[in-house]
Structure formats: C-alpha cells, structure tokens
Length: 126
Image 1 (cartoon, rainbow, N blue to C red):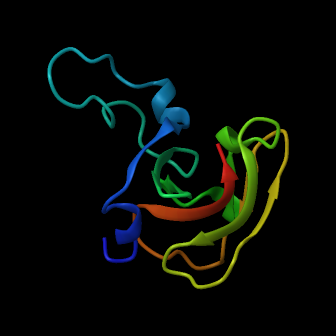
Image 2: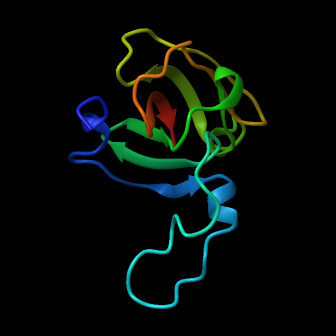
C-alpha cells in the first residue's frame, strides 16, 4: 500500500471504471454490496482507473505476461495524447507506444509489489 499510496488517497473515479476479462464475466449484482471478484481471478489484463488532477492512474490487478501491458481504453484516436508513463515504486520513465489499438507499455523486469501494479500516466488525456 505504501508504494501505491499516491494512487489511493485523494483520487477520484475516472470516466471509465476499468477494463479486462474480469469485468466481462462479473457476477450480476443481487443485493447490496460488491460483486467484483466473484467471477474469474484477476490477471494483468484487468485494469482499474482513477484520477488526481491531470494524472491518470491505471492499476493492473496482476503482472502482465511478457512484461507488456496493453490499455485498450487509451487508444490514440479516442483518449488524447500520453506524454509520460511511470510504474509506482520505480523511478524510471517507461517505454510506451500509443496506437489505435491502445497504450502499450513495456514494464521493468522486476515487479514492484505483490498484487496491484500502478501506472502513473501523464499527458492530455480526456
């Protein structure tokens, strides 16, 4: 929690809640409470979004296979221009490519946590 704290405290929901396989198979809400996590286990393709100021945080709910994350919601023809991407817990700027398919981010070899990995995305994202 210490590593990802800036993406937790004082953040607000973004226009899109998230993306990934777990959202596609989410259990229907049958009563008060939460229904996420009752379907398939989370993977590196399951992503949740929050924002703080002009920064977008994309939380990967698992480490992606092949050290590459693809964020389909951030397609170049839809979401604005990404200028910088960092992984919280790592000081380096990450290599990324924003195309019509999505934002493809190359992650470092070493994971920075155990269960949630947060990308700090800056730019003119709408």
